[in-house]
Image (tube, rainbow, N blue to C red):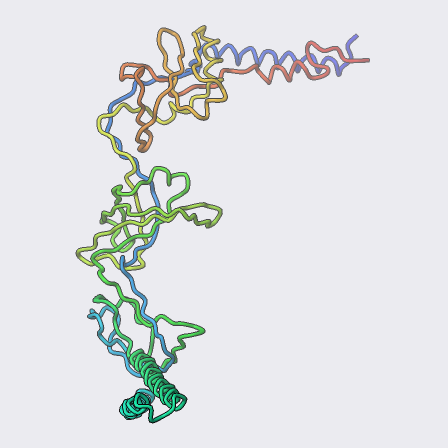
Length: 401
C-alpha cells in the first residue's frame, strides 16, 4: 500500500518526466542543431606587424654643464631657449678669492726665475774656476745642488700658477659646444658646491633637429625588434600627427617595473621643424614585419583544440590525422584542414601578424584549402536527467525501509 507521501513523490516524478519529454520533443523539432565546427579558406592580404612601446624624447647630444669650483652665482648671462656658441660665458661664480692667488703666484714665479737666472750666471763662473782647479770639488757640488733647487722652485711655482689660473678660469662657466639652453638650473646668489653635492647648472642640447627616444619594449616582443626598423609614433601635444623614427640601438640590460620586464630601445628621431621637445612622452609602433599579398588565416585557426576536434571527428565519422605529437604541440605552429571528410594537421611557418590575421607559409596550404578556425565542444550527457534518476526515492530507485 502506498501512503500519501509516496503518492506525492510519484506524482512529482511523473510531472518531471512529462516536462523533460516535452523539452526534448520541442528541442529536437524546433531548435537548430549546433554547428560543431567552422572552416574558412585562407585569403591574400597585405600585413604590417607592429610592436607597441612607450618612452620619452630627449636631445640626441644632451650635455650637462656643472662647476669645478665652489662659489656663489654672481652673474648669469643666458636663459632657457637661448642659443649659445662654444666657449661662450654662461655665468660667473664668486669663489671669494678671484684672481688674487693668480697675481700672488705670478709675482712669486717672477722672483723665482730672477733668482734662478742670477745663479745660472754665478754657476757658470764657478764651473770655470772648478775646471782650473781653483775651488774644491765639494764646493762645486754644493753650487750644483743649489742651482738644481732653484730650477725646481721655478717649476713648482709654474705648476702652482697653472692650477690657480685654471681655478680662476673655472669661475667663468662656459658652453662646451654650440647649442641651445634647454634647462637653466641656477639663480643669482645661489651657492654652488662642486665636491659633495655636484650640481648641474645648465643643460645644453647640441642640435634639437636630431633627437632620440628612449622607449621600453616588453620582453615578449624584444626578439622581433632589430636595428634599422622603421618606427611611427605620436606625442600627446600633437595627437593627430604621426612622426617617423628608426631603431638605433637595443640595450641588453633589462628593467623591472611593476613586475614587467622591458628592454631599453633607442630611436633616432628627426625634428626639422622643432615641434618635438625633450621630455615628451612617445607612443611608439615599431614595424617589425611587413608583407604584401601574402596568404593569411584568422588567428583563431592557430588555436584549435585537437582533443575537441578529435571528438567531433568521431561523432561525425570523419577521419582524423595528427602530424605532431603532444610534446611538440607547444613548439610547432600548425593548422587543421578539412578535405574529403578528413581532418589533417599541417605544420606551418608564421610570418607577419596584424589584428586578427596571421601570415602562414606552407607548401600544403593555398587559398582553396578549407581551414578549421572554430570548434564547439561535443554535447555531454544530460546532467538534469542524471540527477533526477540518481536521487534517493526518485524513479528507478527503491526507497530503503
